[in-house]
Image 1 (tube, rainbow, N blue to C red):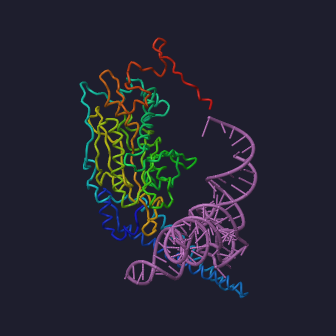
Image 2: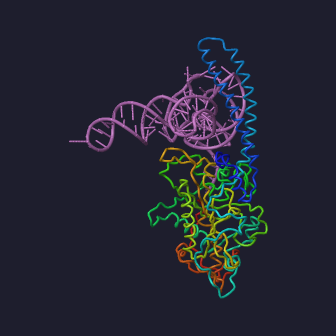
Image 3: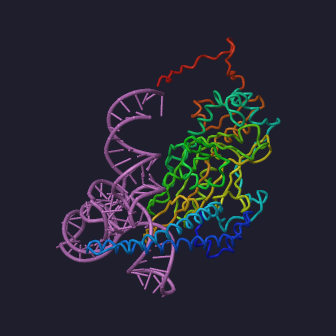
Length: 455
RNA sequence: GGAGAGGUGGCCGAGUGGUCGAAGGCGUCCGCCUGCUAAGCGGAUGUAGGACCAAAAGUCCUACCCAGGGUUCAAAUCCCUGCCUCUCCGCCA
């Protein structure tokens, strides 16, 4: 939600901002509707005042034993007017909300102006794309060769855009989650506080999604559980940001930094034909998310830190990446400024998004009533929220399979992950065991796994 | 899922249908006092929208005592529904 006073003070500036996002907004109609709504509110308030005055007069008279029938009749008349005014107010309020809740955030001044993703600006690169002496295979082929990635069986149980990982693949996914969380929650060399880890619900109420901006506009992107009026989260941003919804936080406590691993669920409506193969675009994927709550004057610095924190994971894993600043036309609905981090995919010969780090300024905080008490003057103000992937697990896994593949079809495990893989430093295609079971001769020694399934 | 008890300000906790935005306490803030600290004393202390004002201060109006309906001239207070919490039972990872 945008700051009403700010928009109404300079509607032309707001209109320019919306146009820079490629969204023409009829500010005239918006201003007019707002004025109409506001007039209805004032009218309703005036009538309430009148009724309150008369009612308390009745109280006085009753105590003195004076007759009140006449005033009571008056109040009844006023009440009729209130009823009508309330209906009008309610109607206008609904119409106004519908408009205001679908207005996107205003881009920050530092965001490059541009029409679409072609005008995004590359800021920096990290690492070198690997050089191969053979044509690198796409990750789904590498994964299939290793026997750790299976899309056919996933489709059998769940349909398109789901995946099934097995053996070292499943373990690698778990390793990445643990590795990333450990990185973000580790104490920092400069003594600044690390991220606090949260484990959050995957199903949320509509108002939670309204706060972060997915509703009302992007309902078709969400999986919805109609029987309970709950939505599956499209990102941990939703539950983590909503953790503090409706709260007032003392300025000294800011910034508050949280990280959380969750599965994420997206319908990918309108993405038909895009990334139909592989792990890039799934209905369900894993992500470690970073979320900041910060004071407005510091949030732009914090976005830099947040982005560096996300990129740090790629550095440790030895993956090549670049950071780009999204232009106004490519900015997400709630964001005031966004950096995308893209990782190198050898099979595609290009960088693909692996993290999106945004400052939402006070946009989500207004919608979710997340405020802070400024220590200087004790005033209560909306704070700023930020978040970024740190990182998307499936895409990281895919990038590892592609970037560290060997000619034999194996994959080298980056050194920091080896402890998380139980010492495994190389995935060997010769170790592959089909899910339907190995033949008697090549069946590996049974793992000494305890059965915990009986709870 | 069944039975019962509740949901009031940062927290605890009163509240008879009318002057209750809400007693009291705790906490917090500002002063005073005590040569430090504690204690003590005085005062202030919800949020949102709006009016007056150049602005601040201040005064005033409207709303909010889980949410939504209802009764009433008038609802934190009475009624209904929903949600949530707690206790007991059932079921269950």
